[in-house]
Length: 133
Length: 352
Image (cartoon, rainbow over all chains, first blue to last red):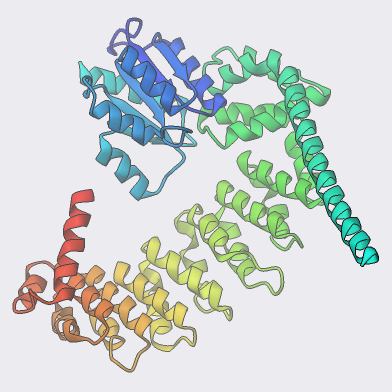
């Protein structure tokens, strides 16, 4: 599935995906790659922060509960970095209002609750990138 | 002396031997588990690509789905287990496609049969699969599983019924809470009922008249959570007359959420000093939530209550009532209860 007409040209856009669940990591990577994004997928928060610091992506999809650094920790570090305005989407099984509030309070641009629809995730990524341009 | 020393040595050796056996058993179990995981990964490896294609919703021509349906034997068992796991993570079209694979494999039919398996683990897994597959034709069997002798199976059946979301199961789920010796945990029942839509309001009203206090608590709590105003008469009755204190507190909280202005009088009545302290606190919080200015005199009087927590809750409730409530705090600004309530309010505002 390629990016819909009117959406930003995806091929040159790099997206960082961090999730310790291999199923989620693989399917989000596959979905976004099929849409034309250049995806770097990593299995934990520390790798996510290292990947971000080494080469900041145009957007990051972070799982909230990861070993080492949580998605919230990584998000906090991103917002304190030299590239604080990179859009971040949090993906999490934590569905309570307070969890979502915390995500947005720390600076998330979007919050998707698992179980999630891969199609909806792609639409949200497209929308966030369009707004960021 | 020698006999005592030999006995001590014998006991020590026996304990050490026991520990060694235990360690060996743990290592063996872990090794077996790891070897099984490796075998599963190997079996699944050729199907990993098609599985991710289907799960990501990219199988436009259906070829990946078809490939998954061809799996046989142990590979099929491992694949089905993986699909069930994936169904806990994704929803929408891809989930429906994966359910179709399970159906072609006969996994849904097998799970229906497994609800009567002698192993409680198999019964619980079967119920979970039927829920994740949204197998609504199995609601009667899942309702029956709510009476299973194993609490894991009962929990799993309630979880499945919640996922299926058929409101016709609401009555049995609520009734299962109060089942003698085989009761369903109240939290599990509440979670399942939460997923059943608006069609359960009458069941909740009925539940508030149940003989079992835990059933009444869940019914009252959910009536408030879901804003089912038709349950207000029952909630008022529970607050005024129920024999169980937790039921009364839950009813007060629910009235705070969905009550009418006239309920301020009902709640205020139960803040009197002859009522249990926990109920008075629940009613004060509910008055703040209800938001009717008629509560101001009652709450203002409670600022001087000997219980510091009740005084603080009263101050918070007055703050929640807006300008009319804040006016009532003038003259009390230096009191610890008011200072704490203001601090809590500002922290809440900052974190919102």
